[in-house]
Image (cartoon, rainbow, N blue to C red; front, side, top):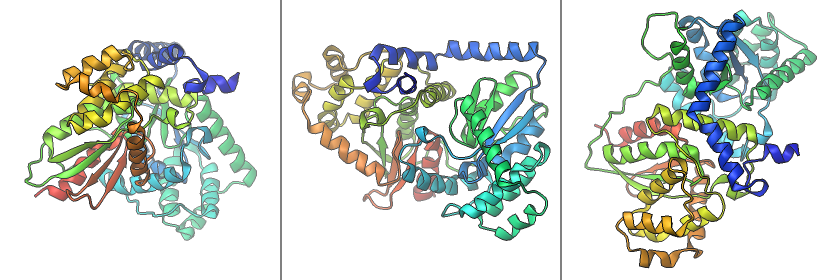
Length: 448
């Protein structure tokens, strides 16, 4: 029973109606607002301070970034920040772990300079140094945690055993104490329905890494908890790419969407804007949704993904509306038309409209009547296009797209690949969080 519930988003364990109901619940702005309002009412009634939890994992590259912003958060807001040391990620939530580990290192190496943080590690630390780091931080008092954790993190990722040994003279814990600390931290993290480190939690809501600190900041400002007079964001990358870029040359931008991905939906508007504002050849390469790739997504992760994507959509003025998940037959039917529509030069427009139908209009994209209407709206001949309906050519196309995406250590969507106009020099990124990084890379290649 528990397993069936935790995997309720999986196609094999739930009806479409129940899946849709869950997705609409998690994405609802009204429910989101009510949860926030009720949490604040309860906090005031119990006379509690604004308490923010921070989950730190010593060998998590993203935690290396977030720990450098702890002091700034505490100095900018009237909050109590409670650091919690955690251990291994919840394995149910980590898909393709080998690719995940490789990608995390590369991603943090790329973005750290934009946040003013030094990180050049090309491999994960030795277990002996990880254990020593956990021993140090298991014995540090909360008031000193951020200062010592920064020193520990810098030494750990530089494989600087000498500095860790020096810190161990002042801070050390037994193996049992470390184990108990990590187990307690994981228990709290799991109870908050999260699964990674480098995340913040405040009153029923989670904020992962430097990419989501702006949401926490906005919420605390709205509650009147800001304690300084500054207007600048406490955590924003220092960017140099212009809003628009003109160049006689172009790069290729491959876009890997899936039809059941809320993050893909909230990225679509910005992909369209990038095509308008930057010199790119946009190549749309759809892939199967994870659930149709025989992966399962536990409930706690599904809840976070959908609610977080909805939050991101609102931030970027592209909110979700009524959701109708296309998992299974609807997706297969819609995908079957993609190759011929893409050959007609309307591949991106087709995927974009399908996503809007599924995540805003609440339409079953597998209905023939809807597909005919969509194809006609794209100024294509339905009588010709429908010949591909339910054929199998699309499977080979999507399989090749998936292999291409995986070759860049990307397994989730949306993913992207920049290449020079001749297809050389590939640069892969995963996630709508990194669309700013795409612009930075294009600017490096084509900017003056």
